[in-house]
Image (cartoon, rainbow, N blue to C red; front, side, top):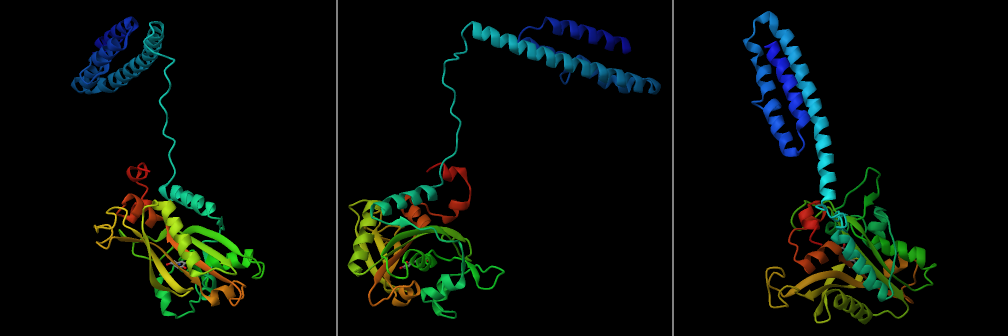
Length: 344
Ligand code: DAH
């Protein structure tokens, strides 16, 4: 056995020295080191030896195997280099071909839609005002005319923090108070801003609701702002966002921080108003809540409601994408599934 092993070692090395292409290399590997290769069989044969010879032979066989594997790796590198050089010489590799582009990722649909919002509102004279995600109960509710225990609080399921009175904002509306106080110069300056950002709600995650989502809030304050300004502004936004041919309608509604309050619908983007599954056979899709700012809210922002008036609106960004592209499940947005994200 020992002799056989020695002979096999020698023979294998000799043959390897003559190998000059990858096909021969593969054949060599199969012959000596493959499952049924010469060396493998010899190693396996250790069991047939008398007990006292086994350890010695096993050790030697492993050494041979390792030596051959090393020799093989060396040869493989050499053969590869030679083949590459040959291909280059014969012009089989076109080094002038442009490389394959690497995927570099893309923007999230919420980001691109937010940017679309910014562009449209900027054209209409609205600046972006950044407001915080972690808010006080006072800003998120009280100053917006929603006192503690007011039944309207049920409209927002709230994430509370471990600090009493500090919550994750349930909507972008607290930015109304912050923007009035920061930009209004004690209620002396008109303002026109949008407040984009993430909102958080303590919801059961489902096809329709998520615990976080983007909203874009809008505020316009001046001395002669009327309901007609609000309607015209929102309708113009809808035309720019969804197309000039789309009808818009306003329904009366209720929000504690606006009076009167309305909800805005756009003609169903899928069926054009005839009625389909997406619009629940109503022909309309809801896109925003809005209204004339409540005198209490204006006052909390530092304005005298006898002199100043304003309107406000709030829109859900992911909702808008759902409508535009027919996305049926809101969980896709934070699901990180590339099959969804790559479509945008
Ligand atoms: N904050 C409301 C919500 O999250 C949306 C909203 C409605 C905002 C009416 C407004 C408004 O500014 O005027 O449900």
